[in-house]
Image 1 (cartoon, one colour):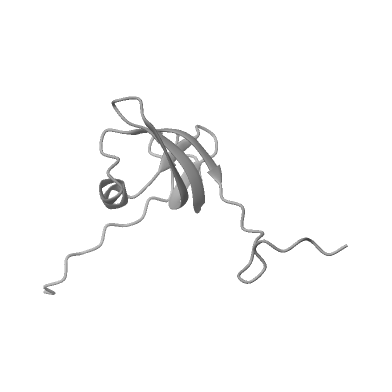
Image 2 (tube, helix red, strand yellow; image 1 turned 120 degrees about the vertical axis):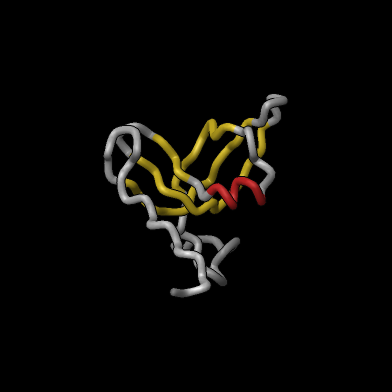
Length: 92
């Protein structure tokens, strides 16, 4: 028997509707219990497209200080910009 804790299996379907999850990186807005909104960019997560449930790792939620906060907006991050090209005008 190993001394390493067994990793939990990643979620593959939504626990609410059994829909497939889109694993990606999301730009999000979280609202805490005091109604303050906080913006976060490039949050790794999984989105259920049919019911719009966003799954984010609970450890990450704790690290970001979002315990008790609610995600009010999430959109898949734009991955068009590549290293070294940020801020440059597009070629004509």
